Length: 251
Ligand SMILES: [Zn+2]
Image (cartoon, rainbow, N blue to C red):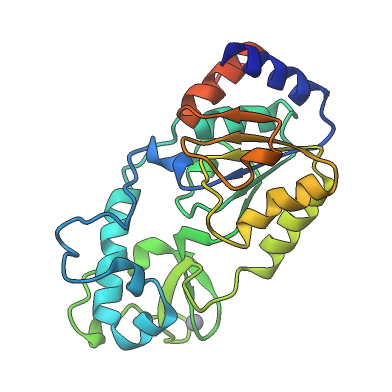
């Protein structure tokens, strides 16, 4: 790996506009469980079916119980080396834009100043009626009947998690900023993403189409591996830790 890391470190130092995209694999080292895995609590329910506007409307009690479980994991989660190295690269000016599919806010917790959150943020909630945003502590409440559904203090509308649910569009400003960054990128890092979820998985395609070179830090193969100049198949935290050491960056 070392030779490849040295080569990539030189390319990063020579780059003019490096961009990174992170996915779920960036946060697994922080102990955030994949909600698709069976936790017992959900053995009779498919959690994926709950992450939708339909579920929020038709099965609100299950919906908020599911998010309460996600919050219980979120509050204790700490940034890991992936978040820390990427924040350090931003500080050093080596990484110009950071795009994430994650909703856990751990990039910001690691000190990343400017993060494009394609799927929103679990640290906020939003009123379905007036659109105001609040801290998500307001929806981390016991919901036993529909009367308990958390509501906006201003207008009484239903509060939903600040994440993009199925049947919702991605936030337009985030997707526009991400597309612009991908098209400008001369170096594009995919970190902890298997590139299975669109439209995020089209961002590195855009980068390559516009002449950018691709580096993939992921444990499993992706459909873009044949187009990548560098592939790091170990834990993203290890490879990025080696990169930081090679660049002489302290975390
Ligand atoms: Zn409201």
